[in-house]
Length: 182
Image 1 (cartoon, rainbow, N blue to C red):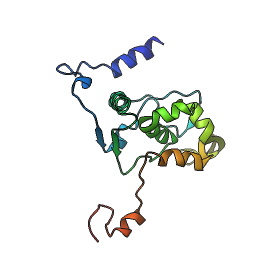
Image 2 (cartoon, rainbow, N blue to C red):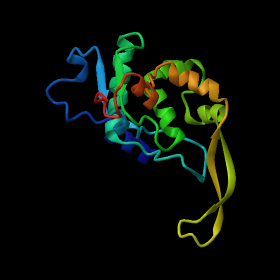
Image 3 (cartoon, one colour):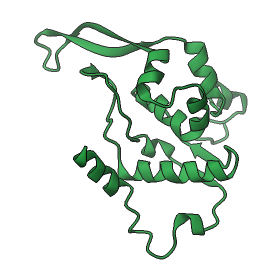
Image 4 (cartoon, rainbow, N blue to C red):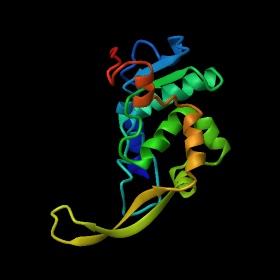
């Protein structure tokens, strides 16, 4: 408990803001480009030895962004924050949970899903299966979050704040992957 409190104190240390506090700047909106760089937001889980959860320890920059996002959204009735990224979710279910925590935390709270374990219990199913070890010599039993459950519900939550643009959308507007005219 003491180590965790020390780590949280370091993460949330605002000594770098010696001139002005963020709340004194009068910021009423936030645009975060390359938002995928902030996916390492700490979360806790009781799941043990489950592969594919990603890094749960968190980073200082993600924790600081989360506090700023919460501040802006609380002042603007759940609005005022925009994330831009080409890869909001690249590897883990924890990344989906993290994006939802940033951009729809109040909704998660209303639904009792603000904790990772409650979110996972509703939307993913840990399963055990044999996998080839990293060296490729043998198989070992590995528990992993292999599949989502209640997919329409998790996608409805995600689409309530995300504007997803696919390659087909780009082609309809005659632009390539980089947004250049075709």
